[in-house]
Length: 354
Image (cartoon, rainbow, N blue to C red; front, side, top):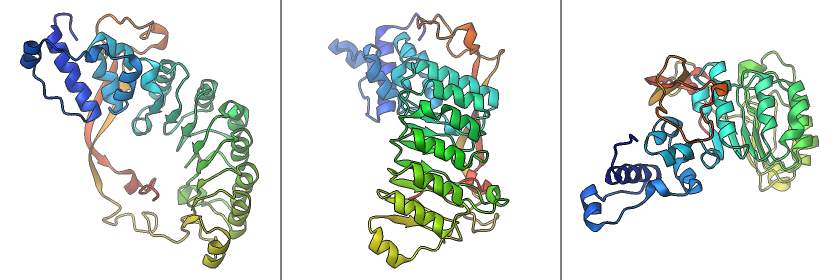
C-alpha cells in the first residue's frame, strides 16, 4: 500500500483480500467500521496465520498482489509460512529454463528450507535437482514430471531425500531402474510412486521389468503405484504384488502384456484396486477425437523475469535482503494469455486417476 492510505482503507482492503482467500464473505463497510470504532487488524495477523490464508491463493496473487496490500503482508509473502508447499507445476510448463531456475531458488530460499511439498514440471538439469536435494530436509512430497534428470544424479542425491513419502517421476525419460532403486533404498518411508510414461517414450524399449524389479526389491511399503504405459509383463507386476503387501492401488493402464486373473486378485489381493491394463483414455482415441482435442477456457499465464520490466514490489522492503542483487530478481513481470491447447490434446496427460 502507499504511505498515504488511512487505517480504514487498509482494514477494508486487507479484510476483502482475506475473505477472497478463505472463501468467507466480508460485508463490513468502512463507514460501519468507523462508526463502531472496531477494526479487524488483518494486517496484524501473525505470519503463520497469514501463510495458511495465502495458500488458498494462486501463485500470481501471492507474488504480485499480496505484497501490495501492506508491509506486513509483503513480509509474510516472502517468508517460510507461505511456502511450506511450493506448487509451480502449471507455471513451470510454460516458462523458460533459466526462469524456472531463478524462481525455484527464490521460493526455496523464502521457505528457509522448511518446504514439505514441491511440485514442478520439467526440471532442465541435474544441477537444479541437486540444488533441491541440498535443501530438502523437510521435504515429504516431491513431484517432478517431465524432468531431465539422470540415473547418476539420482544415485548421488537420493540420500538427501530420505524423508520423502510420495514421489512423482512421470515422463522422466532419462531415468530407469537405477534411479528407482536409489530412491527406494534411501526413501524408506515411501508409500506412493507415480511413474507414468507416454507411449511414444517407451516405443524403442524392449521391456521395463527391470523397473518393476527395482520397485519390488526396494519399496515394500508402497500403498499407491502408477505405472501406466510401461512395457511390463505379468511376471514383473506379480513380483511387485508379492513384495509390496500393503499396496491398495495399482495403475497399469496401457501395459498390454500384463494379464491379471480376476480370481487371483480377489483371493490374494482383495483390498487392491487395479486400473487397467485395458481402458479407454486419450491414447486409445484418435488425436482429433472431440473428447480429446478440446481447448481450455481457463486463463493461461506465463511469467518472465526481465531486467527492464516493472518491479511489482516497488518501495522499500523491510524483509532481510529479500530482493538482494545476488538473487537478480528485480523486474518480475506477469503476463496473461487467454486460452490454450489442453495437455490432454497434446497427448501428455489424462484425467486424474480415480
